[in-house]
Image (cartoon, rainbow, N blue to C red; front, side, top):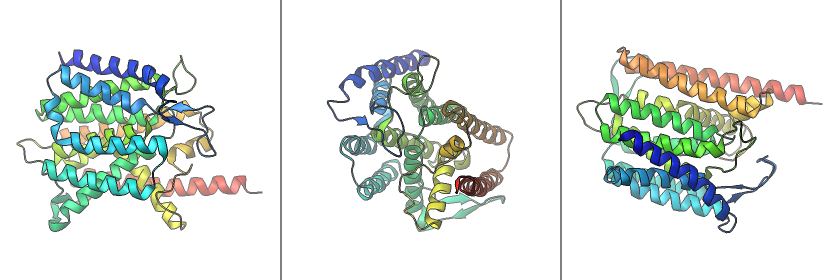
Length: 347
């Protein structure tokens, strides 16, 4: 029956994308091209709404709507604020404040927090004490922004979300958290329905709908909830936090690297530009579809390798150390690549 519910999520999301796209101009939910956004024509920002419709309808049909009670309110708040931002453009400071409050709300309702952190390459954990809740909130806000920022190429964010949902669902199944596994599977199905009209595929040269801030933030909060429930709640079988975060490593590392170099250059770390890793791949000559699929592959490989290492009994600190080392290598490669491109384009 779980497969049937996933089909409901997929079909609902796919159909809703097309229906909502017709109403998008009247609702001012349209992304207009500009110097940074280089799509050729206005694109409806309704993909996230469609994904959430598919998810919640499938959860209702499957009798699992109650499983979402802890995360429903923070998701709803971010969805409403994101929807207003899609239509009217809110200030970055206001959106950040809402994200911080939503992060606190999720931690409060779940009772989950990062009280002990693995030490890279070492055994044991570092007791975080009173810093646990603020650091957990920081982690949530980072994931929300990472997913929002990686939504820069057709199909990129949707594919990364689908991979993360599938990986978290597998982790939930392996630890007998069957309600969480079903929610993750429904999310994956709904996102795949959206990707039918968002990814560059043989039947479409460009995306017909975008995710939108409403969808990116609400879905990001759902992924945060899955991570917290799997890794930071007291249950007999817990997924190590490093393993739960691994499927989100690509967008999170991209956020950290981009924010670091923006700050190093004296710019606002949260200011939108065309300086992300996916933009770098385009500047190096990769077609959009190839760049997206390369990042999907990297995301899947990181998640798969981390899961395999976990199942083989590799200690969590070593896993975290490898991810941190990979992030540092990417930091250096990213900077050197952009400097080389700037020198090449200089008169």
